[in-house]
Amino acid sequence: MEILSLLSDGFAVALTPQNLFLAFMGCFLGTLMGALPGLGPANGVAILIPIAFSLGLDPTASLILLTSVYYGAMYGGRISSILLNIPGDEPAMMTCLDGYPMAKQGKAGEALSLSGIASFVGAFVATCGLVILAPQLVKIALLFGPAEYFVLFTVAFATLGGITSTNQAKSAFAAALGLGIAMIGSDSQTGSQRFTFDHIHLYDGVDFLIAIVGLFALSEVFIFLEKHRGSAAAASGPPKIGRILPDLKILKRCIPSIGRGTALGFFSGVLPGAGASLGSFLAYSLEKQTVDRKGETFGKGDPRGVAAPEAGNNAASGGALVPMLALGVPGSGTTAVLLAVLLQLNITPGPLLFTKNPDVVWGLIAALFIANFMLLAMNIPLVSLFTRVLLIPTRILMPVVAMISFVGIYSITGSTFDVMLMVGFGFVGWLLRKLEVPLVPVILGILLGNQMEVNLRRAMTISDGDWSTLVGSPLAIILWVIAIAGFVLPMIYGRRMRARMNSSLNE
Image (cartoon, rainbow, N blue to C red; front, side, top):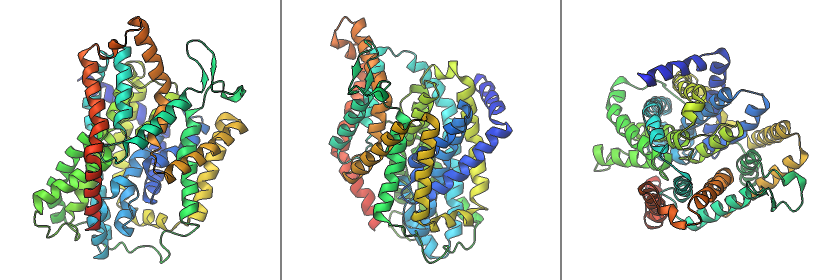
């Protein structure tokens, strides 16, 4: 009953004209960005961060806008997958397998609507799971001391590469780079300057918003300019949609697939290092093994092959918010960006978030429920409008992204040095992408580096320099086991998992 009371208070916060408008705009813009191949939810949120902060919104309103963008981008990723056979982001890869054949059969509208319904169910159930599970995790997290928190952050670094990662060395390098950047500025205990090179603008360290916008948004501009050189995604006109609403019999056939995909997706989202990509893959694979063992229909336009992965990846997006809000540890790349937003708003995610800022966290959860219904109502009747975003030439789109980045960061900081630093991070992000080094561990290192250092120092002070305190409790030992397993298992199974996903796409 206490949860229901808190949730009703959250709806009182979310159901204001301003917050409803922000949720609507976030859903709309997120769907548009998710539809563009290559952008995805992390880049979409990063691009809009400067706007959210330059508008002077309060913390709850800022989070409602950006999390609505997150959910909207997860919905939108299916559009280019189904119409162009080009995933909007990695979790939408499995949707291509049956979505694009349905489009070629003249059933693009039905596939888009079915995927929208599956996305709604997955995200709605995941948000319900967030309401139930996050407060329970908070009770466990209250048992954490400095040593346990240090190990928990280690788990985040060890597992964020994901189970499908094929090169953990690059993930480790990216994390080390992020930790190195986090050390720039004043020492938290002694006040001495570290790695500032006597440059006054670096005395307070590197603002992680500058790093995020540079690494994600500007590097995306450089990548698009290099690869596309102003071409449109589709030069032959808007793709043909056909009938929009799927047949009722098809919906009934897909209900079990949506249910299984939702359960697998939510579990993958909460589980460290799994994420939406694995949730989507497992949901599709399970359906193929369950209803089409002989391979007669899957890969040839089976609606269940669209519904299951879409339910899976959207459930995973909601599940990834659980560890981020309850423990302060992101479960995916986009939640790492949202974690940066929380910290910039002087809100510390973790166990105390639910007691110190209940209006923020429950208002956010209530807004997620509202955003789900908005997305369902928006994605079916406006599907023809969203498909037209695929026709926007990059010579128009990318200057807009760059303009938002430059104007937004300058309006927040008022410093030309920060703008130049953002450009520097943009080139670094472009180079890392060329070398196939993941960007999320860099961001995570910048975000958690100082907290990790502070907790390690506290643990050493309490234990009088005894390093065994890091394995001095059963909880710490369990976390170390998770961290080691999360780092080692991708070396054993990651390449195999990735090969299976690619082979499914190539069949």
